[in-house]
Image 1 (tube, rainbow, N blue to C red):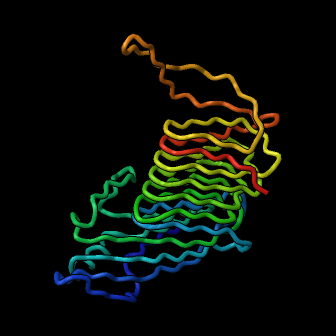
Image 2 (image 1 turned 45 degrees about the horizontal axis):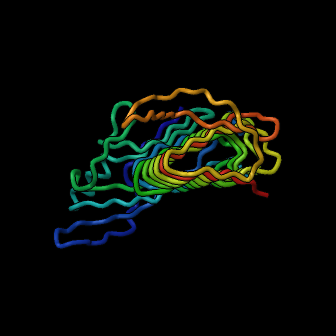
Image 3 (image 1 turned 180 degrees about the vertical axis):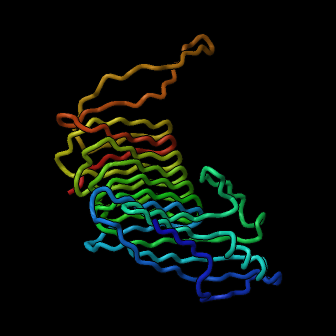
Length: 284
C-alpha cells in the first residue's frame, strides 16, 4: 500500500486583495497512478470539501490527476497555516485509489463541519481533474464551491454533492447520485442493469435512458411534477400514510414512492426530488 501526502507545491500567483494584506496563491498538483489490474473491480474515491470534481473516461490504463489549488489567507502566515493544515492524502491500495482532502474541519468519521474562511482566516479550494480507464468505478464527494462532472465512465458510481450540481453523461453502470442543493442531469449510453437512485432536495432531476428500457420506476416529489417519455403501467402502492383531522376534514400524508413499470419491468430505478421536478427521458 502506498500513501502520499501533498502539502505544498510551486506557487504560481500571489495577489494582494485588500489593505489588510489578504493574499491568494494558486498552484497545481499533478500525479499519474495505475490500478494493479485494469478491470471491473477497480474503485476511485475522491473525497473533497471545497471545489469541483471532473472525471473523464478514456482508453488508457493510467489515472491522470491534476488538482488546481487556490489558497486565500488574511496574511502570509495564514497562507502557510493553510498549506500545513489542509492537505491532499493519496492512498493506493491494489485495485482502490483514494484521494482525500484532510483538514481541521474534518471529524473523525470523515464528515465535514466547515464554518467558512472568516473563522479560520484562510480558505483552500481544490478543483480535481481526472482521466480514468473507461471501466473504473467511482465514488465522488464534494461540499462547497464546485460541481461534479462525469463523462464516459462505464463503471458503477456513488456520487454526492452538497452545494452544487451533478452532471454525468455517457454512463453504462448503476449506482447512486444525489445533489442536496443542486441539479442532477444524467444520461446513459447503456441502460443500467441494477438498482439505481437519482435524487435532489432542492433541484430538478433529469435522467435520459436509451430506447428499449425495461425497468420498475419509483418516483417521488413533494413540490414538483414528474414527466416521462416512456409508456408505463402503474404498480400497486404500499400505503403508509399519516391521518389527521382539521376543520372537520381528514388529511392523509404519505412519503411513499409511486411505482411504474416500463416494458416488462426490471431493475428498480428511483427518482426523488423533494422541491424539484423529475424528467425521465428517452434519448437516442
